[in-house]
Length: 431
Picture (cartoon, rainbow, N blue to C red):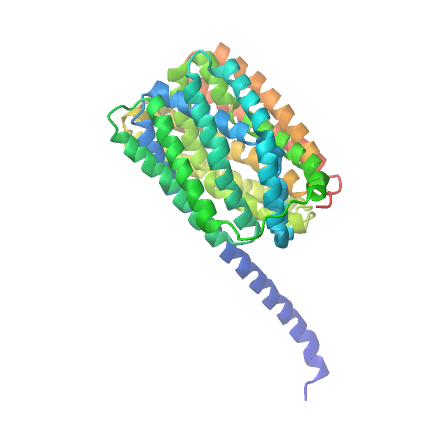
């Protein structure tokens, strides 16, 4: 017979067992997700090396800037309804087919706005440097081919199928790398030729994503559901456009003010900085999912500061390691990258600060504070434009220009921190 005195002893043990079991599942999910990030990192590096050393530095700068603009413009697709699809996959997976139909419908409706916005961006930033046909091809590849691949990734992550999402990430990034390698073997190696290879690689990724990885559910149109969530989706779309504007606006300004060659060197440096963000984005995605279910999980200062410190440390150490390698082996990533190699270490604080701004934006999305997130990102985009315009017009020496980016991104981080955590004092919105 069980003694009554044994019960209090077993309850703490049961709690400890439950805690360990819960964390074991979380670690397993994170390892599944991070495996995709690791594979993406490897193939992204291969893709970057092949492309950066096949195009001239000036043409690489033009492509990287046009691609950044395409990523920003792709957020207009379906008026941001991808956010509703992600929340549905996370919380109500039985409605994925219904919301996928809504995404397709709104995607078609959004095409005229996407085309008009793309042409406006071209006239402002690219008319004097990039042919319109090349710019249109790159935006088409980013917005109508690669963005739907991201939808398949988002839905799988929302469903908790991190292993499938990781595999799709690896395959899609590998197809881009294959496209870049095939381009190296082409008879003509210009940005115009590359734009067609880029379309082919992204189209192949789209076929793989929806042929093998997207959940099979019947498509059903329910307009009342879409209208109810459309305002929030438009807020998300605006916030996403502003987010990528403030993330990528530096490339646009460098091209417009400094010209294609400086834009190429700058794009090489920032692409290496981007590589440090790949594992951080996996962590932010999983944290955002948990916050959708428990919005107050970051209420304690120790937790918030601990996470931010970890993000900054991992990002900084990653770029420091890369800077050391390029210092001793400047040609390790190819002859074109070697020209930018001495400058990489000068941007030592940029990855951590940049990744923290991105992480803080995800916190507001997870809490349903989409309108505040859009407002904050608009303010950050304006601040970044002012700071970078001042830097680009007053500092002519490239090493000093790169060094000054540490101060620019520090000021952006401080502004983001103030705006984000002030907003998080308000109650989270129900999803």
